[in-house]
Length: 319
Length: 299
Image (cartoon, rainbow over all chains, first blue to last red; front, side, top):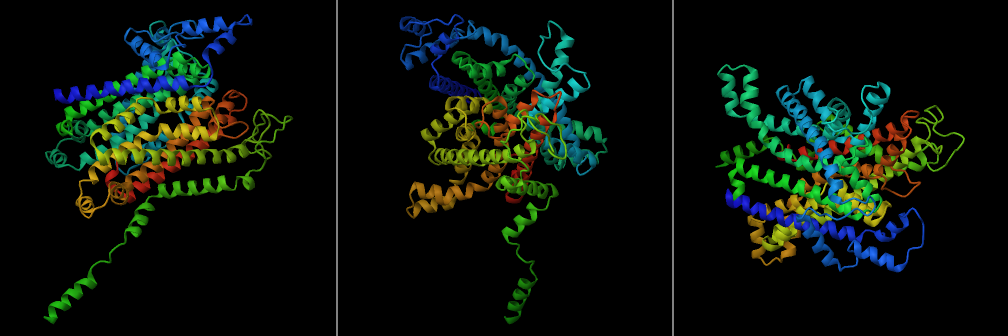
């Protein structure tokens, strides 16, 4: 097991380094010279001399060869220095420090919501196979997978926000500042963000449970005269749930990707919106930092999934 | 002697008729009503996209500034947008964007991904490690963010959106194909092909690839839906085909600003997106069951 973990760890580090290289290259290939943009942003539109531009270039380290720039940037990561935002006058680390907790809050809540609703729904559909509960929930899950989440967000905003007026339609408040307001604001975005994975885990739980229900030990449990509740909860769910929970790790990139859309719809100042805004204003350093952060989270979660797989199924360790 | 021969013949006659693979495929595929439903939507969509010129009641680019943000009426079934363009016509034309992006991006992703996966799985060793780590690195980014960044790099427009989505959708194909190749290359017929002197490429293309195909077909069908969703997401964020072209995601985004006054502007294109993705997913489900029921739950 230790060898397996170490091997996977080395792989993960390698992948992360590759990812940083990819991010860096893409950012450098993006159109538009950030320094010229920076200069043109200046409120006092004055002529900027070539020397001033060169000085700015040197200040942001953009006059160095690409490889050196990469090495500096890569080295900076370990010092917590991700560079400076060209437009906002803050460091990238500050911006991420502000946005990351927001996305984490939103992401973790929707991750939990997805499983709390998805798994029981899947169990019900499997146990009541072919009945109306199965048909209804399976159809809902099939629809939930197809719905564009930004559109669902807009529907909810219209229905619960504008029409009924029950929930605030946008914004984010820290739960430590105003817990009630924060929760109210989070209900709709968290639901939208959890929707694809909720539907997905319903379907996965259903097929995993249908597989388990056929097993001999379930028949034995029934023939012992156990109540349905006990058979389902103690015998079937416990075994059927393993692949579903492990697959939960796959939800991480989906939730982070969804956050890009949902944060724009609900005007939430998280990582996703930070990335989109920075991308449109061509603020390289921010995009670099955000994508790197997301990549790190995803690689880490994949690593955990792999390790838990190896723990559950020893055969995998030797592949 | 002759008696036993007769029994053999008798048994042969009484044996149930062998069902051809094609017939079995058709029976299973069309066995579920929901799959038929998906198929009908899909055919309808293709007809809509092909004959958009005839089906659309108005020119989707024709601005009527005296009649902007009109509510649905008999004249404009789904109302008009901020420039007075007919929403229904724009949705009909938008189906072209969605379908083209969906099909071409998936074709691109599948071709590149399958080639990489085939090479990685077949050769193994270093080739495998390098290719698969690069694929892992691609997977380290949320798909939509990756596509968004690549699209920002290339600029908007139909072709660049297709490329951006295509690149970001490579990993699933590469991984699936790689797994298939690793598995299939152990078969005796592959060893036999080597024994009679077949070269690497011949073995890969003639013996491994065709046998790896069924799950990949299913993945392709299902991923077209995902590609259409992702395209909608991108155009919602503002990176999409050049105006005045119609894209459903962008229409949702435009309508969002007038949610209070004309909600239908935002609602209608969303329903179109959902219906199409639903159709592709259901057809994918049907294909999976018909081609290889063992894949149920994994794909």
